[in-house]
Image (cartoon, rainbow, N blue to C red; front, side, top):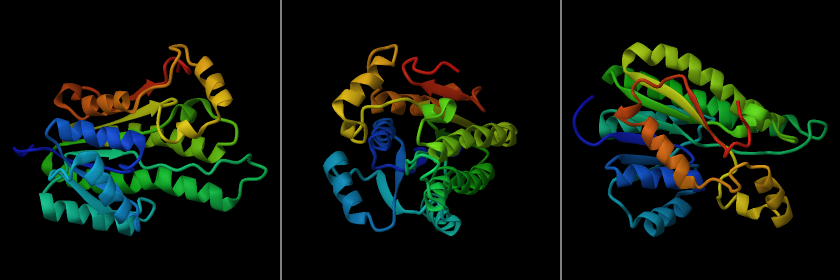
Length: 249
């Protein structure tokens, strides 16, 4: 790998877990390209200013991960501006929950296209760039519900479960090219999204977590940082479950 600061792309950067990942990378001398959805530039600019004091090593680039041409444009920008890509974190994801009886094809396709096809799009393009430099770390964020399933989430669970097959297969392709590919499956993490869950429901969820609490975004970020480091060079094709013992698999 070339000398100098590592270059990382983090999708879904503005969420709770994404923000913690960006913070962890910046704190450890990594240059971060945080991807934002088209049309969210003002929100992202405010986020960068308030959360990171306009850190010069944090860059904002728009991408629709479900759109291959948009991903191509992003990776081309990264290559032109930085010359390489060392780390990719596929964190972008959405939910469109509904029982299968009521779930529309639009709800199914939107989640699959963003969560799974989006991961494929970014992996495909980043892998090619990493291969040219003989080095790379790809970390795909899955979910405990991709392992155990969840009522009303056949689309989300299917998309997150599909990430495992993608991760393991790509790991085999990258193993002799200096590229490791792993996934992380968070359980319930304390974020703005989970804070909107009704207190009674949240209490029930926490009661089912053996460690007795939700996880923190920073805990996920530290795991990402480890998988992105030289210390994890012998780990590839693996999934790290982070669910407080809620699901043992």
